[in-house]
Length: 172
Image (cartoon, rainbow, N blue to C red; front, top):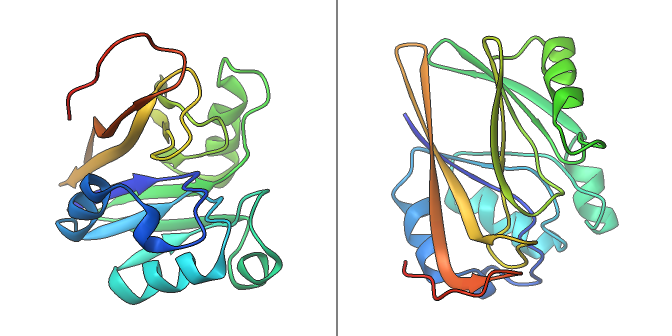
């Protein structure tokens, strides 16, 4: 199964998302969003267009926070996946390894930090897809998660030629 993980989109309308991100999501089997949609209109479009699991973030409006949970746990092809927005507080990500253990998941997808991260803690993987619209000291990104026969692979995808804090030209 091909899953596109995204977080921290921070847009008021779905059509403000990078075209490359939308194409990637359109080609996926499932979309997970780790919060900070900002607008319920954007959440509506995710729910309408995709097989979708999402959580709310700290910047989401009241309607998004009413409709989504703070944490989700679901299973895909024998892999337990957790989803949370703001789970990291120390930037070494050990706290998220502990959170994943608390939730009993194999993979924990999180947001809030606006940069791509993949870390392994024993059998547990924690991953942040970054932000496609407001990266921090990184490039505009999402994560492509492949789950097959209980195995997980995570790839980094640039979604537009925009980066924060990087003095290079990006090619998508």
